[in-house]
Image (cartoon, rainbow over all chains, first blue to last red; front, side, top):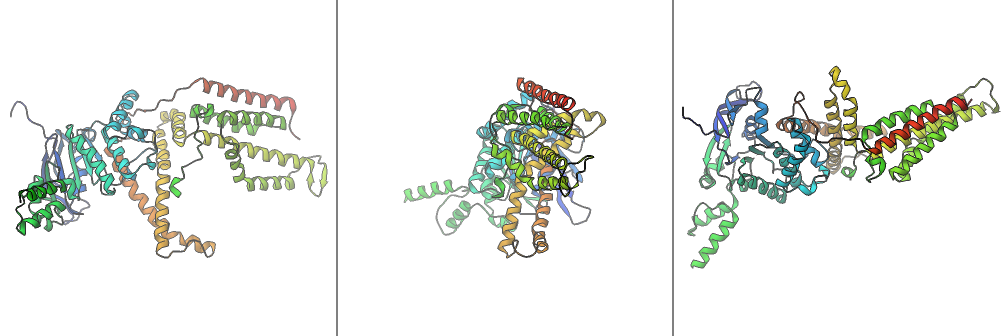
Length: 284
Length: 269
């Protein structure tokens, strides 16, 4: 046993989970996964692949049938530490309308800290900090229903941040937003990750996966592909098999390459593709 | 659009009454209702009227908004008046014609005044207090019941979540109605029964979606460390100010005035 052990932010060991008691209903099958502190992990998978269940297992909303889930060493199975786990794991869900508890933005952000018994003065400070972190400080006294979808999700992130979590999980938080709202939310999440927050996003938008440190693809409750975005998206045939596509830019680059254009591989974003094409033209 | 309707009739302004503590206002309303029911003569209503006028002036609420509440119960007032005119019986009646007497007319007028002042008073509270402040006030006022393990906080939370979801569910209902209309549903014609039946395809999806929302909200609350047994704190602290003192004094003076008038001026009949 070494003197100090680097603690994983999130660690799942041989986790299995099923809803109900049928034999074939397993949603998560013997899954192991660990997330480093400060990492940006993106979980991809088609509908029914078990990705939302995975998210709920991480913060103890669901408990594994077998195996262990640990967040910074606290086990979700332990009744005493499950509240510790939830304090450390902030979670934002899909529907922006179903997460607000209070009518007014600041009251909603205050809900988390109120639950864990933070003093009134400190709650005020945390609201300041959380709303500033998501760029919503101007909307502090506004009624939530008057905000756009992207703004509501940013408030939901602020609500999670007010508990000072170390891990933030976005469980398809951009699925119901328009492209603008999606961009807003992802920018906020990436900024938080740059500042040291461990970020886990669950999505089926390939575009959101390209900036991740690591991508895992979930299929029928198992991790089938794992690696950097470049590695994962260089296997379009594999992804197709699991009901996923590669990002549009990658798709175009691959097509060009197949038809003989000497373009480099591993292109993920439209900006990269544009740059690469410009370079090719200049070289001619 | 339905979602523009905010719940209640809160009138946004920064007046003396608006700034009063919601708890004091709620207690004042209770006192006011007691006042209306102990009034025995028309002089007493002068006091009630004066109280209402002063409160309305200091709340800077438009008169139209206040009076609209009376319009809402006009039918009830008329009904009460008619019933009293025809069925009220006093020992020595001065009959005007048929069963209508001076006494029955006075009494009917008295009852009408009672209803009108009652509605005006409660209207003033909802016009000057946000629903959130009201639920907080109820939670605070009921907090002594925690001693007998009454779930005060849970009750207040349920109330505030219900208020929070009214616009959301209204928007949802709007959407479902439009979706059903687009498929040829007809909500506006036919008998009352037919129209009520036409609402079923709206209510069922609405109910299902409400359950779905409730489940997601529950998850969201859980992941924000909600637990009813935990030591909770409150972000907002309500402090009493000089306004609350002045307001309470005025309420008590009014009550004293009405009681004195009851004793010295006697009953109406």
